[in-house]
Image (cartoon, rainbow, N blue to C red; front, top):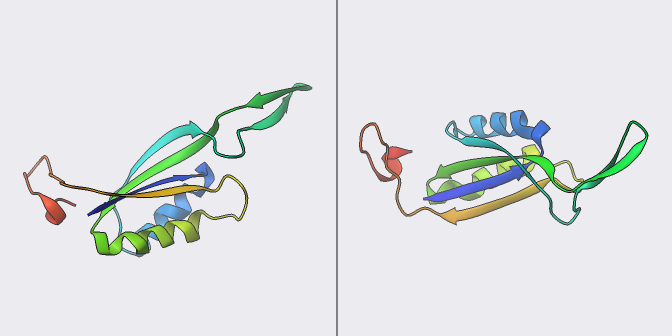
Length: 112
């Protein structure tokens, strides 16, 4: 199994969710996070004064799938979340050693 963690722009969440639903992925965890990459935030003007925002609002999406589906899921996220502009985000793919469904005690792929 693989865990896919995607950090995306907030306004792209619904598109990503729909793209994942289309390929049969319905379980996911979503968190509102803040961060920055190479762009290191941005400058904004508020009431005539310019100020710097070091951390930008992002969405962190986590999905655990069978290993053979990881590339398909990553591609769906790329297609739905991409704008072609700086700050589109990142995708991290990591191995998952064990999954346990708390309610039933099922483990492995059956717990997904």
